[in-house]
Length: 520
Image 1: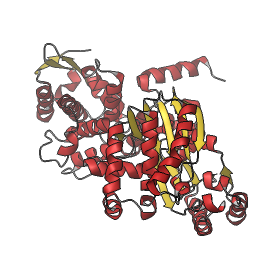
Image 2: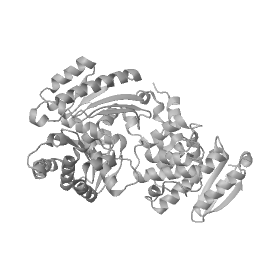
Image 3: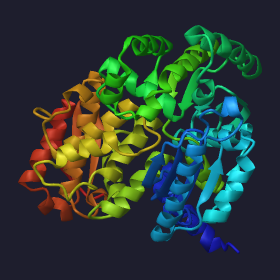
Image 4: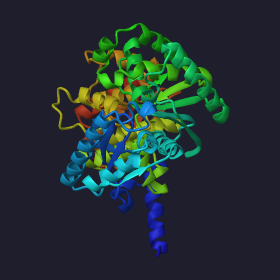
């Protein structure tokens, strides 16, 4: 039973943390999700993923994939690929042993199109359970679509559009909006199932067209954004990056226009696939499916006319984790939860990020929520790379932000966050190897990231424990004045280095630095 004292304490904690709320990874329900193992038996690959860390934005503790090709030849024979069955069985035995060695709870295992459609699918499922003790959850196409869409919501809470998950033997569609999954359906447009069609490219095109038209009739065209899930889509995105010489090789939240997709498909057609495979680090088994998947994508984009195409690294496996989350965890910001967990695990003084945020927040109060969440994330991460060599700490910070497994971040936000953290440790960005990435930001964002970094740089060294209780920052942008008001007990802390960093912060704002001495 919740007492009035408990309620008051809970309310105080909520108010203390502001709009971001109390960290949920400290709660029992979240800790129960701190390490979850999932096996995905797909038509093309069999994969084990073990999630770990902050339940709302988990890290990949272990990730292993075997390209078994269970669905190869399924359209002609109606049965699973015999060689693929052998390889899948060996892989699942290994996964069970690995899970036992990690001491994780029983694995959650799901099988998709190949196993559910093959006439020997039920027998194979029984064989797996008999030989390994693992129970496969064989899901239908609509359930596969729902779980994949939930995976997108795990990394993209605000997702609004059409999720398109391509596997080896099927392609699923689902509508997402307002944090929920709506209409969903499945189709036989997996590249393994489309292999071997007669008539070459023309035959493939003619086969896909009526199926795609039926999908449009059932799902509608009013989707501004398409979220692409699946290995074949990710392979095409890597090729798009290669074609564009795109400097940030992070697939999650990578975005393409319809025109870019068209240009990349033309690029694929005229390219040497072996050379593309080497340049993009794609497996030969995956690359062999790219030409077929490219035609599916071409018709998908042409039929639905989205304004934007987004790559999601999260899919059915993340959807299974999302399925186990209570609602109080689902609604939280994955970026803030991941940053909190990182601070708790790696910072010298866990909890200082909140104090630092309070101290510098007056400089950013006029900003929109989306910018303020990046300010909060930066404060939480400002010290997590302190163990790196001092000469490289700034570069490690930038790499950590731009390449880490963080959900809820666009590519431009990743770079902004990385640049702010770089300036947390370094006054100048000249001579760093990140010019191409930084150049992706508009000049105003570059200046704002520098200001945020230098604000953290000053606040973090001014007082090791509670800068927000010892001094107060005020910024008046119209007057171009930055004021630091010191309490008497903080006078000795404002030494030469602190003075220099405060002046550097004022310079980055183009503002006059003023010092006041008063109680508050």
